[in-house]
Length: 178
Image 1 (cartoon, rainbow, N blue to C red):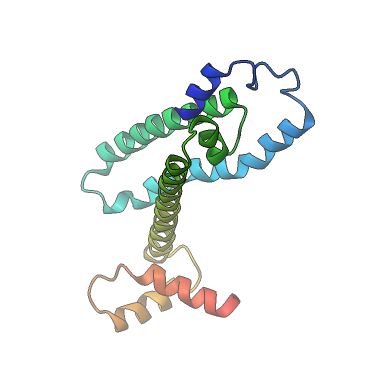
Image 2: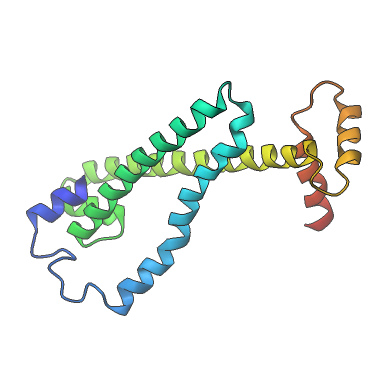
């Protein structure tokens, strides 16, 4: 939203007004940003892995995926339009162009840093949960080597229905190979 505001107030200095929009530097920037974009959208696959934990997965999975895709697509569209209009790929620089008060700049930078930190923690949390749950599913479905042995070993440690088999498997693999 800040980038859109900046671009509308300074329309002579945005990427649409710049004749070198598709130079090699901008194309390299697009190619460099692709892994992070694909990583962000790759997280939608994790909903399928976690569907076993849902009460009604046939109804809830499509609703969760569609709702999340709409929200994330809208936010990414706002960010992209803001960056194009403000001629800046750096969110801190974009808001520093708009805000003139130094105290307000510091406050906005802290708020942005908090949002980015929460996003990183959320992505790491989802990645850990889906990795452990996915490994657990591999063990339960006996689709990996030594699944029976891992299952028996995990059941000896915690005899009840053990959702931590995947974590145990990942720990063994990481200690052996890392």
